[in-house]
Amino acid sequence: MKIALVIERIETWRGGAETSTMELGRLLTDRGHEVHLITATNAQSLPGITIHTLRCPAVLRSLRTASFAKRAAVFLRRNDFDVVHAISPLPSADVYQPRGGLLREITERNVATRQTASRRLLKRATMAMNVKQKALLDLERRIFRPDGPTILAVSDYVARQCERIYEVAEPRVRVVFNGVNVPEPGPEQRLRIRAALRREHQFADDVLVLLFMAHNFRLKGLNPLIETAGRLVVSGFKRFHLLVVGRDNVVPFQKRINAMRLNDYVTFTGPTRRSTEFFLGADVCVHPTFYDPCSRVVLEALSFGLPVITTSYNGAAEVIQDGCNGFVIKTPGDIGLWARRIEDLASPDLRGKISASALKLRERITMTRHVDQLETIFAEIVERKGCRAAQP
Image (cartoon, rainbow, N blue to C red):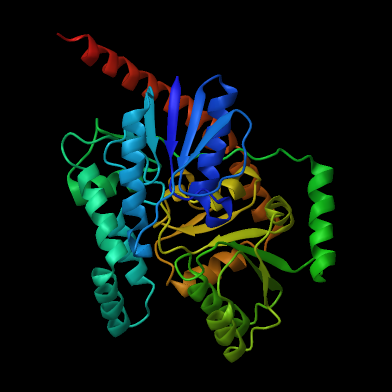
């Protein structure tokens, strides 16, 4: 099949959607498909993938996404593709995969990160007046029109958003659960990497290393996690250390850490290309997110057998059986329960049992399985197009 993948920004440092798109392109190419990537950025050269960079100048930066959608639609009309798979909003696509979820849900969950009613009201008002938000919402509404593309939800959570917000459900909405492919390290490699990470940060063997990995610290729940750290210290549980890995402005979070006298318990590492080492070196992945359609970080942690604590606002939580292969806490703000779960996982025996159960999920959450399902849907679309073309 000749497949077009449409995504406005493709720099993988931006997050999971970009990383997953690159991985998807490579896997489709490996299976013999002709893959074309349509983007607005200067993407790195990828073996077997043809990259089309569309320049999208706009008077306002906030209108660039709408400009990209228009130029992408024109480009696709002038070229012949069997399947157009859009990750960025594109009403003319054959399939739309909103890896970031739906805009109204994103807005509400961003509002929920504000800690007071007045701040939540202000955030809701500013987002309602945001020109970019309005342009994106217009694109999204056009996508969900009755004759729009098939919607590929990366979790049941996203599928529920489609039904609640736009009253669009199966069969037009298809759940193709997110996936990741990670290396499978041996026991010796795990022990070596864990020891190296502890030497690097001067952690004793009995210190519980908590891993928080994200690029949007507020949305992914760093504030309640800092409050949880404070609760642990006050309660007398002090043999832990939180590693914050990712790209964001640390200043407001560092101020809170300073005020709570938690400097000895939290380290900001910055962004990394060593994510595998952090997953293998940590003891627990903590992801108290306010919103995640289906977190790659959580899926990668589970695939490495790292015990995970996350929230019900994360589509990835759908594969976690609470207390068996991880913990799912309803909200990021239940500080007492977050503290108790972290204390529970200080037990090496419990961590070992949860790690073994998490590793059993590995085959269920691979990107290989994800692409298998996509190929089936793509074949249905090609067949449907052929039937329409054959009609007199």
